[in-house]
Length: 495
Ligand code: CLF
Ligand code: SF4
Image 1 (cartoon, rainbow, N blue to C red):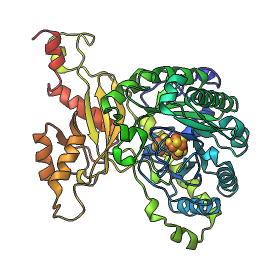
Image 2 (image 1 turned 90 degrees about the horizontal axis):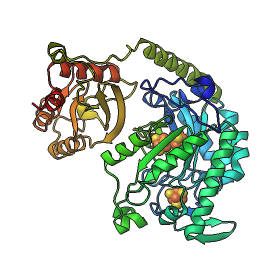
Image 3 (image 1 turned 90 degrees about the vertical axis):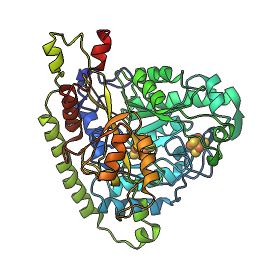
């Protein structure tokens, strides 16, 4: 199907093992080490953001200007603003210490294209001094058409546009105003201009063969019913990936939605919408809504390790650092390819019970279950339960294993043996894992084991350091053989 991958029309874009459509070689190269554009890559590669863009040209009801741009970031966090020179120095220093660093993005603290001089000055210098790093940009889209040529000129090959609607009536409920051609414009007219600019920008990027990811914030009661339509339109135009993010609106964020009690979607509402939009275009499910100054693997933030003071006093041989990155990343890519080739083809599980009863596969479908996995990277079950900062949630079913989402957790164990306030935090973790039946980790203590079992979640540390999908598949199979997933059969038979 490679010749169906083009721009400006339907584009097949699968980046995980779950999907069988092959990617065109040039696209595969562009996404295979981008932790946001490839779900697999996010287990191995790191990204960093530099916060050089202080101004914004629109107002979103989920944004408070004191904080980072919520179109790409978690609301309520403040990133330290850098000058372009500081930003370049920071990238050179950080990427010499983290050789898995493959992407540098500008995503805030406000809109990069409302600050074009600062944004492009940073990218221009990076393209010269660290040409191996992929450049990435995230924008609300209002100024996009006028900067598409500059984006292409600096080889910025990954652009995210936040598109929350294609209908200005809905748009007017999300955006109270925009600043356009030196005037503040309100209401439906404002939304109309924004939507037009976003769509035009999207088309212009695709004409230039730049990969586009579309972010949408899911706002229950406002655009939740409408996002399937948005997904359909951007997919038809050729966007590569759609990332539907949950609205996060708390009164303490001081945003319009936060203060007026607009609710966030639940995990299952979000998953259901993502499922309904998933077709030829891949849905992103591993977004961490990171800060505008995030550094490291998705899900970790090492920004505190790189203070301005440290950056400014550091010396770095950026040529040598680049050579090291290239070597390390080539090794990772080879390792990923090898793993992919070794991966057994997914076989449909045939349970012993169904064989005994002479039932066919079609009549007998086991219920899917959710498993939580503790990992610290490399796509392995390699984290101690008590050290996990987040868990990855996988669904295992008769059709395969797929990644669904991550959940953040409080560390209940702080490294000493006392774990004084352990219980409350452990209970919070258990609460966050509601709906999961199994938790896979490298190790786990006796106390949390008991608490998890009491909450109906089976801990499993029999697969330490095994690849995640393989371990999930094995456990699912074991559960089938043990007859633990037979309920649907009984229901189907009316037993
Ligand atoms: Fe940054 Fe965004 Fe580029 Fe990634 S983040 S500019 S595409 S390098 Fe990634 Fe972070 Fe989600 Fe963004 S996890 S918030 S999608
Ligand atoms: Fe805030 Fe970003 Fe919206 Fe601007 S585009 S108002 S910074 S969320």
